[in-house]
Image 1 (cartoon, rainbow, N blue to C red):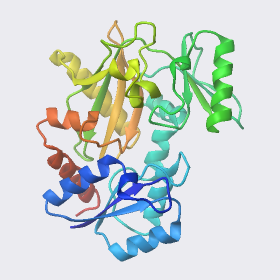
Image 2 (image 1 turned 180 degrees about the vertical axis):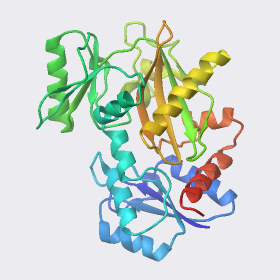
Image 3 (image 1 turned 30 degrees about the vertical axis):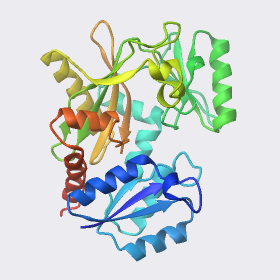
Length: 326
């Protein structure tokens, strides 16, 4: 097929160096699978975006756009633009991405399906206070909609009301987003990648190994642990394919599959969970159209399931085309 890889950029005239490394990886995989591939960078110029699509005339857009200009809801906006053009594209639609991004709303859907999640409260900038039950300290405070650990630091874990309101105010002021405060769940952290639609496949769980994490810090993957390669937090964590008893693995996969379906995730996604010492499994987040870099957790899980990187990308294309009836 003729496939266009769509990616967000932070400048109007990007160079190759401005593109995320995952773009070249996906392009290479698609070409190895025999597809004709082009790349379309997107900042925030809608007419130019439409012209780019018109010139390329793709049979499928491999949508990796996470931003639209500086909007944290950019992935939803890009999906909506693709819908207006009647273009087939991989991953979540505007509605699925909205559900995935609004962590308060997603927890309500999990609750409706009887799926365990941390109790929470939403501190909106413009609307009334919203709570999901009586909360117990400590609380983990983060932006309601931002992802990639934006706005998450060691001080995101609060132990009293004063610290809570200080963190809420900082998120309102610095990120222009509502704040989500949820009960902190102590335990092991897992990621479960899922592929497909009508018959989705839950792949082997990946666990975050906190063995080398600073002992004086809460076991949280904040922005330093994810992105600051020189920090103790980054050096002290790694993701590994989890070694688990069959029964526990089956429980993690079932909870993940239930959450994936509850939030209407399409084609592929990742479910983040925590397992307490008493065996309770909490869904922390459901990530539609998750990150596909070769060393990231989704690709790691695919490898554990027996798929090469090219096969994983091919499975996403197959799931998308099946969804469109092709």
